[in-house]
Image (tube, rainbow, N blue to C red; front, side, top):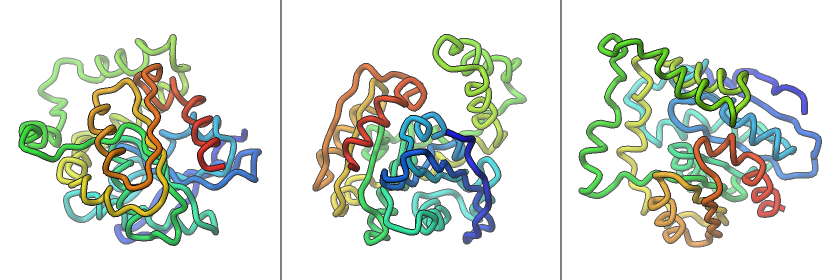
Length: 261
């Protein structure tokens, strides 16, 4: 597959930086991917290459080259800012979301049901409930790079050097740059996931959903979301580990093709 094309779309905050993979399997249904904080649309490059059909994604507002939201990020704000992606395929599309992106996908499916064929949700965060209070309070703290000793080298080692036996260097480097690219605003987007009530949103979704639970810390929340969704197909894959959309790109793409086809 050729390298993704890039362009901009206008949205409420300003501009949305879009990534598009055409693929060589044009008969496959189009997929619109919603990335997790703090990544941009190229987070889904390995998945898009494996899927082989038409795929669109975009940098979340405030990350990559997309303009930031004016207010503190929330799932509704992200959903509205990413909505122009729904018009890109020219037909109803499947929405794929990972981590916080899965919440945006659910909100988008509820708001624009006629434009969404169904959902593909991988590792869904659920931060509601009193047991998550401490996490909700701390999750948006800035990284405070100036207070750390040699923070960039530590992150580079953990995200690139230590993964070279699993992720090719150019790809690991791209993900590293996306992760640190927002600087001290890196964690700001977690405010959206930390303050989103997943249960009522999930229970309203009318479209079919493929829910994939990998071997991750989000497994419990993912299983709960699968129970709340009215029409969910749950697949548990303990063989897919972090980073899920790199090590698991091929099996996730295969499950997706089988489901949407």
